[in-house]
Image (tube, rainbow, N blue to C red; front, side, top):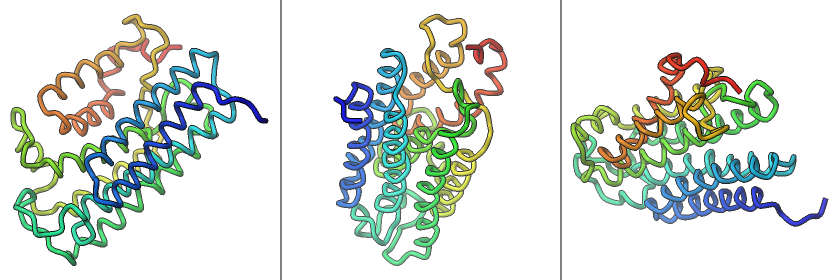
Length: 266
């Protein structure tokens, strides 16, 4: 089995390294960089797939390594971001009561600790089940059944970043969107609800596009191009706050994607 690692495997290892780094930084209170490492890991995840297809397909070793890397970067790391970045009594960032970004100040020993703990556990557990199911499900060769783990992880990385930067959220109606997203003075309940909902979506059989280009033409890639275009506009308007909005558009893509019936063709 000894061989030199292939380029896709090296890119997958870079993804894994980002996940490990994110966990370490989150545990030390370096939350901004911990969040960005999840985004960088997602970029490596895209690149390793492109490299594997360019080289004629991935190996069985690469498939297993990819799942393990995804579990760390898109399963464990988001849970750690939530636990260290958003939970009030152990958060390094929120060592003192914070301004009313969320409708009230959080104090050490807040009663919402249990809700954050359940949410932080649900993310990696659901991610593990999602990845295990994906590996043995032949129906997901050209599309996804259920929310992919990277999409879930990017939501939590963006959510944590937006929490840290809540005072500088910008764009038309950005403040209003943000306060709706966090339920104002019910922040812990919002976090737990999102964790349960996204975990259920990861384990569901809802058909979603894989966002993998088979060619660069418009026909057959309409949904992907529209998602990229809408995402670019939202990022220009809202910055990091655009990620939850893009996720909603992606989850609704099976509905508006019916305008382009050939997007699901191989």
